[in-house]
Length: 160
Image (cartoon, rainbow, N blue to C red; front, side):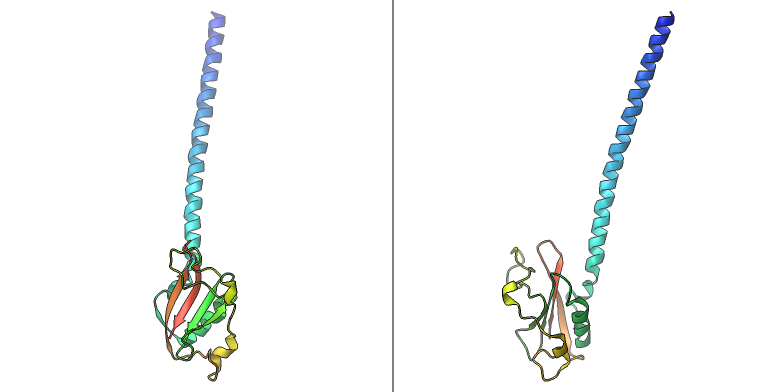
């Protein structure tokens, strides 16, 4: 009788240990999934916030002074270019990096840096009325955003 009681105690202990281990594994797996979901949500929010600075330029009409402010703000941004087309310069002038913009949106190169067309403008020329790069502070410009195939903003286009 003593042996049967000891065997039942050992079996109950083993059963409880297996149940406890199972519960811990289930909790760990669900916590891991929740962590992955939270990380993905955080990444999406972070991407939205980083792109929010450009929403003001997406299909809007802005003044020439806002164009020059954008040039100062974004010209040194890595892998980023700004194209300004004025009445004097219909072809436009790139600041920062020159980007591929002639390709269709589905093309892999759209929004990528074009090293072969390295003709970036000088920001000082945007305030010289005699310059071809002159941006009239009271002029009106249509702004648009250049995105690559990953939907990351790579540049801006301002057209008078």
